[in-house]
Structures are given as structure tokens and as C-alpha cells.
Image (cartoon, rainbow, N blue to C red):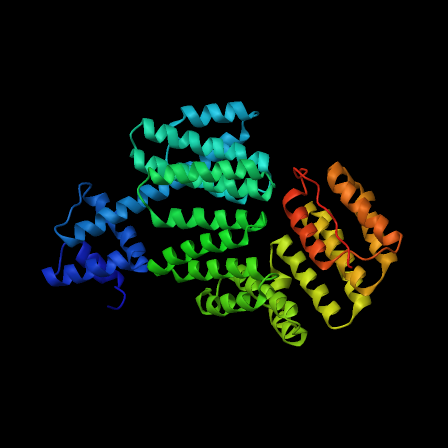
Length: 444
């Protein structure tokens, strides 16, 4: 059906027209946001003349939907205003008290606002506080019987899933596992919403992958993929396949490319972030497969997206991929300078794990080329840079010191397998020491 004109809407909503005309118009209005927006203005006009406006049959469904959308919109605005007031309070205790006691905070709109902040918050400590506010809002809604107990469990599961991700990013592994367990427990007592289960599986996969449990991470992603495919949620399925490629890029780049090929037609054109991430991963996979010319073509077509992307970490990883390409194409000096610049930017933006991993990668490049002096310089930077030395624990400093001694003494180089193990060690234990210090093996 074509869009409804203003006069046609006025006539039909005013009660004119035959039954079939009204039914057809109602069906269209229920599915067309554009026409329903026009109808909202006309309904306000009609209600000014007739405050108790009602219509029979399908048209009443339209009027009810317009009223629900209006109430939801007002609730969102009130939640935004209330969140601003909460933020202005001087202490976390006073903020929690206001959320606990203020009715305007006990709405789904307020909960969603705080949850969205939690998901984007880079500080682990602040994320934990935001989670406490979200849980207070859920508790209050449950006490006021605004939501069922099953829905309350769903909302709590969303919070704990987001908390698990924040703890993962902060390398708080035990706490991340506990948050995942909390989310799983609440989901079992919830409504059975499959989207929430898929979201939990996605964060579980990321956590397992970073801790080195690749096969378990891929199993979790397979469960996530099955849910999205069953629901015909193709964009989310595409995102899951990109996540799979991110896990496989270094260990099985061929399968990573297969995942990216399947993801490509599913990624929405307007999702520039996921498109760019997929292209950078494709370039990385091709570099790992020693196909730098093909990787260069992929990188070049992604460059416009890279320049304009607002996410600083993704832009830095793009520069890292560029350095990998230069190295693979035998532009060694340019690659080395760009690797150094990547580490500078990691440190500037407090991406300390990335900085340690990038330095370790650069160390491996120099060891492979037989440049012990350059490898030693990388170790000295890891040990003496004020930002890095201030955050490194004794065990990590001991690892860098041993690598420095090896490079300085021109001993047998560290083996590729040992460097791979050290990368996994840094990935997991950059913030806190491992139960057992890693052993460094050398080439025979």
C-alpha cells in the first residue's frame, strides 16, 4: 500500500470511510513509521476536540500504539533528565540512594540508559559502579511489581554479562568468570530469551579466547551462531563470524578467511566499524598466509574507513596492520618506524596490554632478522618507559629482563613457539602475575 496522504488520514482517523478502508489504513499505519508519525499529530488534534477519542476495531489498535509510543518517548526523556540529576550528586553513595528512592529511576528506560553507559565505559571501576545502579533499578522495579521475576532475572543477566566484559577488558579473570556465572544463573531463571543467551555466549567466547582456550571459545561462538541463524538475525550472525575470524587470525588464518567470506554479505553497509574490522582481519589473515600483495589490496580499500573511524584503538590496530604489511613487503626500516609509532600511540591512550604485545611482536621481528641490538632496545623500552614500568609487575619485568639478557649476550634466539607462549602469557597476565612464571625456550 502507498503512503497515506494527510487529508486521507484526517478523514479516516476522524471516523469516516468504510470498514475495509479503515482496516486497510490501520494495517498500514501499524507497520509504517512515516505515516504513523503524521497520524500522531492528527490524533493530538482530534483529542483536543474529543478527549475520550476511541475508534472501533483496527483503528483502536493504531490509537493504542500511538499512545504507547508517546508514553515510551516521555519515559525516555524523563530517564535522561533523571540520569543527569543522579550524575550531578557529589558521591557514589548519594547517587545510589537517589536511584534506590526515586520513582523516575525505576523504569526500563532508565535501566537501558545506565546499561548502555556500562557497555561503553572504559574504566573497570566506573563500570562496576554503573552496574550497581542498574541492579538497584531492577530491584526497585521488581519490588513495585512493574516487572515479573523472570523479567527481573533477564535484566540482571544483561547487567552481569556487561560486567563480565568490563572485567575481561581489565584482565580481572576470576571476577569475569564469576560475572559470567552470575549471568548464566539468572538466565536459567529468566524468560528464555535467546538474544540474551547469544550475548552471554559472545562475551564468554571473548573471555575464553583471551585466556588461550581457543577451542572452547569457538564452541561458544558456534552456539551463538546457531541462535542468530535460527532467528534469521543476519547482521548479528555476520558479527559473530567476524568474532570467529578474530580468534583464528594467527592460529588458523585459512579458516579465518572462510569465516570472513561468510560474514561479508551479512554485514550491513552502514556498519562501518564492523566492515573495517573485517577488512583488517582479512588483511591480517592474508599476511599470515604469506600473501602480502593480496593483503595490500584489501588494506588499500579499507583505508578510507580507517581514516574516518572514531574508535582510536581500531585506528591504532590499523596502523599495526600497515606495519605488518610493510615488513611483509620487505620495507623493513619503514615497518620498524611504524611499529615504534604504534607503541607510542598505545601508551598515549593507556592501552598498556597492546603496548606490551606490540613490543613483544617487534622483539620477535628483530630476533628473526638476527638484530640482537634492536631486540635489546625493545626490551629496554618495556623496562624503562615510565608508563610501562609503572604498571608492569615484578614477574613481567623479570621476563623482559631475561629477554634483554638473551639479546645482549647474543645467545641462541628465543624459539618461535616460546614467543607464541609469551604472547599468550602477556595477553592474560599483563596486569597480575601468573601462578607460575613462564619459561623461555631457545632454538636448538
